Image (cartoon, rainbow, N blue to C red; front, side):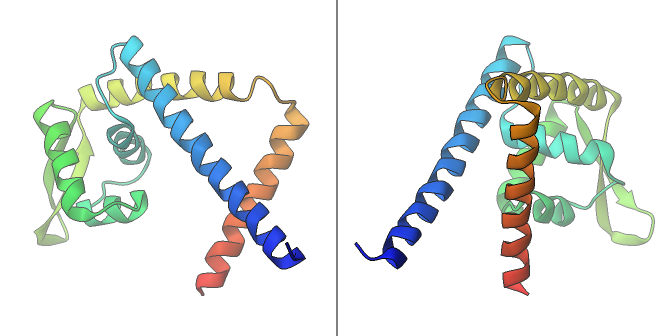
Length: 152
C-alpha cells in the first residue's frame, strides 16, 4: 500500500472511531436517562438543551443548530409539546412565525437530562487524564475548524 492510501485509510479509521464513540455515548446517555426516569431520546434531549440556553428559536433555527431535517424535527417538537415540555408562541416580530419556548416542566426535565449526560460524559473519560482530555479537545476542535474552513 502506498503512503497516500495508508494515510487516507488511517484518517477514515479515525473518523469511524469518532462515529462509534458518538453512537456509544448516545446509547449510554439514553440508558442513563431511562434509569433516571427521563423519558427522552437523545435528539429530544438536544432540542431541550439548546432551547434552554438560547433565546427562543424558530423551528427552522433549531433544525439548523441540530443539523436535522426540519420535517423530521416537527415530529420531535410535536412530541415534546404533547408532553408539556415546550410551547410554540407567536414571534413578536413576525406574525407568520412561531418561536419555541420551554415550559417550567421542560426546564426541570432539561436540568435532569443534562445531569444524566454529564454523568455519562464523566464515566466515559474516567480512563483518561485531564491533560489527555485537553489534548483530545484541542485536536478535535482543530479538525472541526478545518472542516468548516474548507467549506468556505
